[in-house]
Image 1 (tube, rainbow, N blue to C red):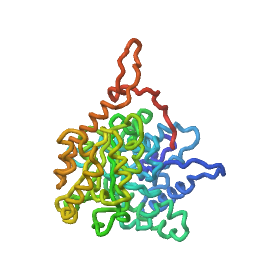
Image 2 (image 1 turned 45 degrees about the vertical axis):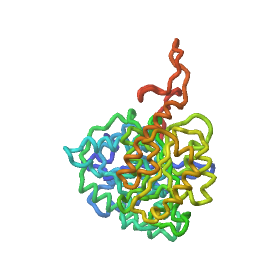
Image 3 (image 1 turned 90 degrees about the vertical axis):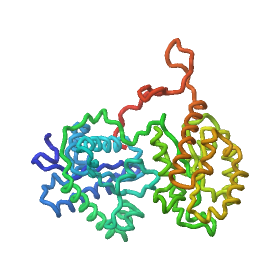
Image 4 (image 1 turned 135 degrees about the vertical axis):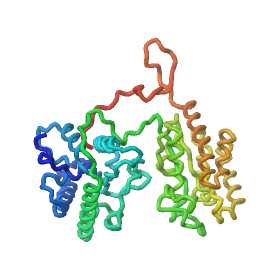
Length: 425
């Protein structure tokens, strides 16, 4: 195709996928730093390869006016060697970025050879730091840290290193390391090109199926809020980092729960109680089923008492509660009588909610396997309760007088018209 970066047989080494920042009233281009990063990466790659300048990489700023942009993007995504997404909170809310990810991911999955792993040709970078629990599953599973990038990069992202003058050397070092990683993957994996996909029909990889949405809420201490002498090794900077089962399992308990929820056919959404407060305590019909993973040590902390009492008094049977309780945690075991008594006093209604199998999720959780087993009936009970209490929409077909939950299937449109195609956001 005329004007592409691989007219001479050279495949572009990377495709830079990023979310545009909206312009402010001062009319200054807020994406100039992204363009600078792109040029710096290309320059670094050219220093370490025999590539012509046109084949080092691709960014949508390379497209001249009048180009059929969807066809051009589809072509570049079908031929580039590495997909380089710039992580930011805005990135994972962008439909355009999600379409680029989906188009490239489709290509690498089509080249899955027998039982071999999917080619690891996605090399992400932090534009601004994103909390781990906010990353979509497909992004969380891809390694995005490397010692050569430096600790300042993890704390501030490339944007922060560029904006603060004393970190400019750290920025140059991070760009060097990122470029070397792109070269290593591009030359080591050599993902074959394919015919461009129908880009207009691609669905964003970040689009959540709202009908299968399931909240996983973590109510826990952090290393900063824990009460002495509670062991800090179980906690992190966010409640979502809480891991009561280490060293048996290194994953935060919310991640373990997400795997169970996903296996049961839902799309998990992990967050803190503050993130989900309106859906857990607010009035009105439910938006989705939910579970609360409760750190039992919060019941002894007066700071959590009003929140726990409000949670117990909220009449929301579609919200289950699970209390992960590791049998190898000697500190919890020694304080078990006081913890259990406080738990029963603060959450009498919640602990009595649901079938006996679901109620055991506050006691039969001493191992990871026990937690997973106890969690399943809670998730199923929450899902069933949501169906009984969910919003009912009026009939949409003339002559039908029976209301129903909306929608019945994934192919059944919702009450609102589907959104039209959006440009890059």
